[in-house]
Length: 101
Image (tube, rainbow, N blue to C red):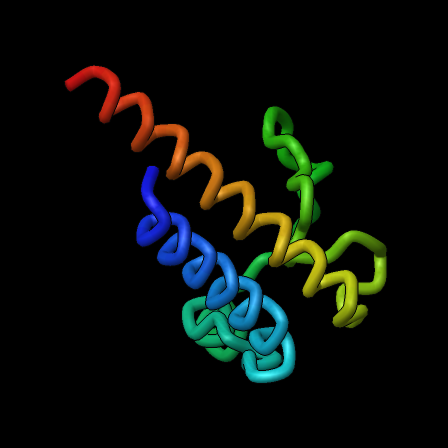
């Protein structure tokens, strides 16, 4: 990989980290329009994941580590980890496809 590609990858990672750091502060507190509409019409059901058998808990539910989902520093860490994992998986898939050709 040449220097131009490495620079582009570095800039992409930097942009992802900046978006991850800013998004908890800029995001809406109630972003799910479908869920809000269901609550307003009385169609929403309250149930927990434990009541549904066979569905595992999320690793980062609502992009939070702790029981307190309002902890923005932990949300930022979860977002950065998720972005890095996604970028690494994308790079790995690209390398596999490149090596196949």
